[in-house]
Amino acid sequence: MIDVNQGVNPVINSIGNMNTPIVIVDNFSLNPQEIRSHACTLARYQPDESTYYPGVRALLPKQVIVDYLAPVLKGLYSIYAIPERLKPAPKNSYFSLITTQPDDLLLVQSIPHVDTVSPYVFAVLHYIDEGHHGGTGFFRHIPTGFERLTAENEYQYCEETNRYMGSHTAPTGYCGKNSDLYELYYQIEYRPNRLVIYPGNLLHSVVVDETNDISADPTNGRLTANLFVEFR
Image (cartoon, rainbow, N blue to C red):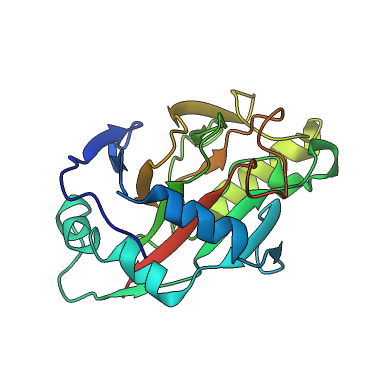
């Protein structure tokens, strides 16, 4: 289904104090309209009850997952120093749309998050809609300085966050800028047909454009493909 543009040159940026590599591939697909058409006409969206994603999602067909991941897996080994003994396994993969209004968000949806604390799970994000939308932000936890969560520092992160929440007004609405608790240190701009890859344990969030992003209509909402791959 996906005709990958073999002529693109991925850009690798090292971000934050940890110099964590992220991969940005513009003009990823030669047939983005076909992907968009499938997402708009064939996908069946429903609330994601397994995560706190603030919207609706539709499972990606298996062949689409293969088409997305096959071209990038080999390069991830060298970029992220993944041990060769570990083999890639796709995890949850969806078309996604943001639908939750800011006033209806849970606290956990109003702060940056990680997808996992595993060092070898990676998010693959494809911006599909052709409109103007908010991108993706990466955040530093100010009390600890943490940019990535691990099994070793997760407890300290939670303790310091809970301590802050106990003496401050809880955040509301979508996060997307600096606060007393989180520093937005890097932001990826939304561009149609841009593919982004980053470790799932980086603190991150959608930087929501409340004017254009919140819609259950895949023809004009912030339509993305969200894939995850674990090396184990």
